[in-house]
Image 1 (tube, rainbow, N blue to C red):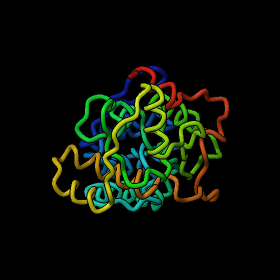
Image 2 (image 1 turned 180 degrees about the vertical axis):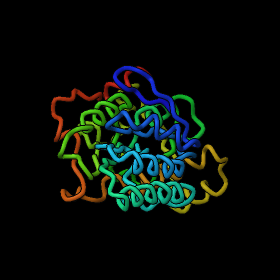
Image 3 (image 1 turned 30 degrees about the horizontal axis):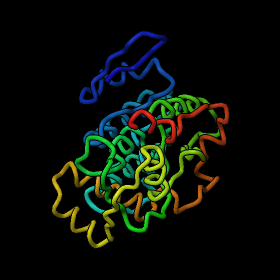
Image 4 (image 1 turned 60 degrees about the horizontal axis):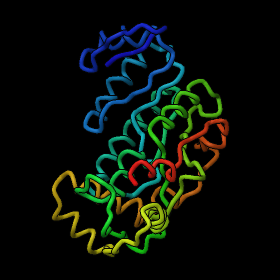
Length: 258
């Protein structure tokens, strides 16, 4: 694990407490970017931050749907639970923090239009999830980074969840498909998938496709990203706090695949 200190690089090891403490001690802010299989290793970061005692803000690995608001099925359910455990540990230790809920990243969903096993956006037919009405939220990775950095020393985001809900990037699956069809000048054949059918597909899928299907079920069929209001006592919305950010739009991003 690397830390930037006044443009210098300090190196620490998640599995070596002393080196982690030494790397963290000179900094004010810790932004975690560990992978989803290392989420629980952040308990070691929490211990080091607690020992150092001078960290003004900790951003744990989140970068997805709000884990305190979603109700996914397995295997995503276990992943949400691990992230929630990290949140509760941070709060129990009284560590100043911000949780970043960025919802759908462009690169994971849009290059394939959320089609499991695909390597490009569909041009003939498309799996269509339920009635396509629940809204999802999309953000480009660079914009997620921009909002995160802006929140680092912003008192309005202290001990809150920073929810990224840029108005131009909120689409139902039906709207997203319609936008893609408009861009390619073609109507796709819709393969409608019911809730029971996608649950069976999840059971039968490979591990890689299973993740995509479970996420799609939670987002595009259950609407987990938009079926709740942001509680101002515990959350803030990024595009309202930082209207100066000229964020990338789904409509612009899809042009590269036409």
